[in-house]
Image 1 (tube, rainbow, N blue to C red):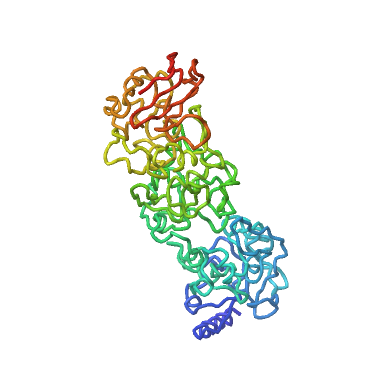
Image 2: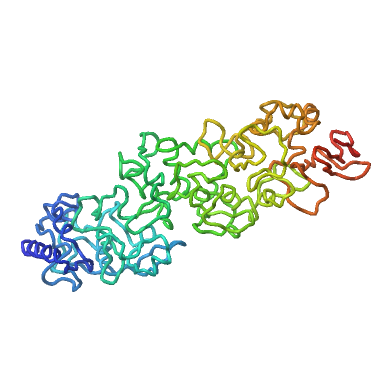
Length: 570
C-alpha cells in the first residue's frame, strides 16, 4: 500500500505543477510536495519512525492518516474518525472574524492533536494499531492542542475581503502569499500555516519562522516596516530568563512576531501574548539582557505601576470610559516603536502610532504629541495625583496646559510670558517642551516616564516642602531650564532671592503645570497658584490673591510665614 500512495503523491505533484490539485481542501504547490519526505518527520508513526512515539510493528507510514480503502469517507482518503469533541474556541475583543467549531482539514488535524482519539485508532483496520506502551494518545507537549483552542490562533473562519476591510490590518485574500493557502471555502485552517508532510522549517510550518513571514503574510501591521522589533540585531546575552526558548541564538528582528506572541499555548490568550502578565512580554527583553533596561527604572521609588494591573487594558479602549490602569502598551505600540528622537514638539519614535487625547479632549489616533498620550489618563478621565494642595486645586492636566488657561508651561502651546530672562539657551520664550522634559527617569536609566527616585516621577529633584533650604540640588528640576544665578539675582522678579533665602520653595507660589481658566478670583499669571497649606488669606482684607499690574509689576494679598501682605506691591 505504501508504494501505491507514494506513486499517487508523485502523480499529485505532477498535477500540482499544472495548478489543478486540491489536497486537504487547499491548493498544494509542487515545491511543497517535493520537499522533505514525511518518513523523516515525527508524523511517521510507523515502527521505523524517527520520533519517540511509534507503533510496535506497523511499517506503513501513511496509514495513520490515509488509506485507499475503507477510509472514513472524508477527503483526502482520511483514515481517522472525526473527533466528536466540543471545542472552546478563541475569543478576543479585537477579533473581527466569526468563529464557530473547527471545520474541514482543521478537524482532521485535531483528531490526533486534541488528544481524544488514540493514535492507533484508524478506520481501515479492524483493530487498533498497537503502539509502544499500549493505547497511546498524543502525549503532553507543544503538539497537544487539547480541546481548549482559546489560547491558540483562530481557525476555520472565512477570510475574505470584508474581514480584511473590517480589521484594517489584514491583507486581502488575493494579496496572501502562495505559502498561506485558504481552503476551498476561503477559510483559514491549520493547514494554512502547517504542511503535515513537510517539516523542513520545524513544527511543520510552511515557511521558516525567521522574520515571521507566515504572520506578516496575513497581518499587515501599521508601522512594522522600520520598527525596532522588525530590524534590531540584538541577541540575548544569556542572563536572566531566556526570552526565546524556541529560537536560541536568533536576533530580535529574526524572532519578529515571536518576540511577544505565540500561536499556540499563549500565556494571555486574547492577544496571543507569551505571558499572562502584560508587562512581562516587554520586560523579558527590556531587562538589559536583550534591549534597554526598563525594568530597572520600574524598580525606583515613583513609577508607572504596570505590575499593579492585569487584564484591564484592552486594545482600542476609550479614554473616556476605561478603568484607571497603566500598561506598557498604553504608551508604546510594539509594532511601530522605533529609535527616532526628534526635537520638541515632535513625537519620539518609541511613542509612534499610539492613541491619545488632544488638548480639546478629543480622542486621536495616532497621537501627534507626547502630551496627548499622557492626557489619556492625566486629563478628563482620571486626572493627575495631587502633590501640592493649591488655591485652584485642579487635577485635570489637560485644562492646566490648554492655551486658554491663565498661564501654563509651554507644552501644548507657546507660553504667554514674552519676557523670561532666566531661560537657559537654546530655550527661549517661543520654545515648546515635552512632558518627559520634567517627568522621566533620572540619568543612568533608560529615558522615558517609567520610573524615578523623585516624586512624582520627576527627572530631577524638586522639593515642595516648606522651609526647604535653597540649593542647586533642592530645585534641580527648575534649574535645568531656568538659570539659578539669574533667578537669585531677581532679574525677573525682585523678591525671588528674598523668598528663596527665607526657605520658601518654588512650589509655594508656582504651579508647575499651569492654572486653568476659571471663575476663581486672582489672575494666576506667571503660574501663580498658592500652596494653601502654607499661604493663607490676608487677615486684614480676607483676600488670597495675586494681582498682576503693568509688565514687571504686581501685588499680593496673603498671609505667609506669619507675614501679612495687605497688599505688598512689587
